[in-house]
Image (cartoon, rainbow, N blue to C red; front, top):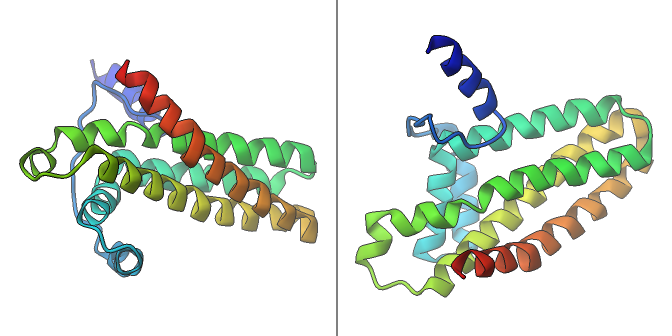
Length: 180
């Protein structure tokens, strides 16, 4: 059983594992950044969902780990094509794992008690996914600058385009297909 727990912990570094329950804890060093994002988009569901992402290690540590691994890989990859594919792959992994956030939000008592429409919740989740992918794309681009120089800056528009298309088209289609 201990061996299986170690395997599950390793797998949980990259994807959600149903057999493991994360411990929710406050990350005070993120408060400044969270307050900045919250002031720009002052809706209660957005604030709550953003705090959930920051405090839940399933999301926050997944984003951090995948970003760090992506930066390391992009900093040693010299091929622009491979770097572009890696950028899209890492953004997809993060974005795909964030889709489960809407199910978690629907199960929380706060969103069941208060009369918040499904559209507001989904719009807040889509905005958070877009912002997370955008910030991750910036960091991955910085990692690529090490080996590719100024050519690595071309990865930023690729990452921005992917983040927009993923959050505005793929995720809503995925959520519609889940409801059926």
